[in-house]
Every structure is written in structure tokens, then in C-alpha cells.
Image 1 (tube, rainbow, N blue to C red):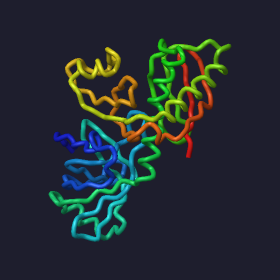
Image 2: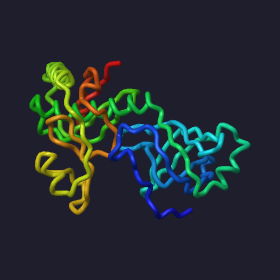
Image 3: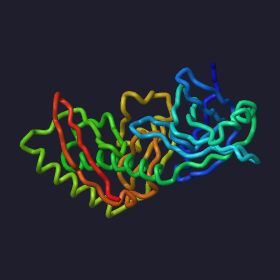
Image 4: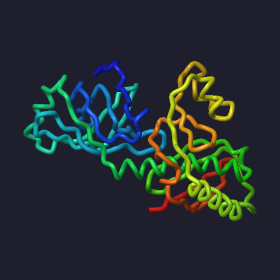
Length: 257
């Protein structure tokens, strides 16, 4: 199956939107047996960038058919909404539904948790610089509920781990208490670099227009995920552990409920 038209990512500039309308492009069963919907646009965030996918429902307009979205993935710009029809006897309506309007509904509690965890990870990057770890380069982020962490290139002296863990936690909670609006903007490369402190990571192509997330007055960061509208919505954060090994440092964290 070849699909050349990318799915428009509506959550890119409307992160707080949880319901929208789209047009059904394709319904199919993949090689792994899973069934999926492809739409012309979506507010569902696909798994990626260290963030879990959204879940929720997709309903066909003027029909009782409801498709339960259990997983969302993106490949070559096309978003696949995997799941099952609540009533399997109505699947033929999806098979013959190309061009029909559908209503999308994202699970609010899951989206909110994912967004808080992701924003917390970015705020952790800010705190690392503030406590004297500007030499550590942010790398992989894992913003899932089961043990979130951010990995940095570089190490921390072993005799400083405990004191720095406390210092980072105090700093991050001070920033959360202070609050600050969170903005997402797609910018030309040069403007994006300026917003991110003068440079962008090597994986951002110089001719591209990256999406930049900015938390309050802090420098921006390239990101394709969803986030809170204000830093204060993270509520609180605990730095549970710092590990340094083989030239890398992992900072594990949890957020308040």
C-alpha cells in the first residue's frame, strides 16, 4: 500500500484541542493483523519523540459506528490509527467509507498526563543548565508514566550525584511554582536557532522549518510532542535518581498528581 499524502497534524498548533473532524482516507488490515484508519488530518498524537500515543475514539458522522483507537503510529508522514470497531458487524461501513466525515475524540486524561510528563522532561533540561550542567547535551527522552527519564551526553562526578539531585529538584519545583506560558511555533531554521539559544541540534536540517516549544522565558527546544499550556500545570516534580555510566547521564523523575 502506497500513501504519498502526509497526514496534517492538527495538534501541532492546537495542542489543547481534543475533538475535531476529518475525512476518512483509508481503512485496512495490516500485515500484523491490526486494523487501522488513515485520515486527511488528525489531533491524535502518534507515539514518538519519547511520548506515548494518544488513545480515544473515531466516529463516523451520522452513524452509530465507533472505532476505538488503541495505538497511533506515524510512517513517512502518514498517521495510522490502530484499533477496533466497537461493533464488528459494522466494519463494512469503514471499508466502504472513503471520503466520509469522521469525528475524532482524544482521551483527555491520557493526553493530559502525557503532556505533563513531556513538559517536565523539557523543564528538566532547563534546570540542568541552571545548576551548572550546561556541558551535558540532552539526548533521548522517555516521557512514559512507567519510569520517565532524560538521557544526557556527558557525566557527573560520582561524589556530586546526591547533592546535585537535590539541587535539581529544588530548582525545577521553583520553576513550576513560578509558572509560565508554553508556546509551540513552527519557524524558519535561523529564527528557530535564535529562539533556542543560538543553535539547533545536528538532526535538524538547516533548510527546514522546525517546531519549537518554549516554556516560559526559557530558551526553546525543537519538539513534535504535546505539552501543557502553562508550566504550573506540571504541579510538582521529584528527581528520583541520577545515573552516570559509559559517558552518559540519566536523570529519572516523577510528577505530582
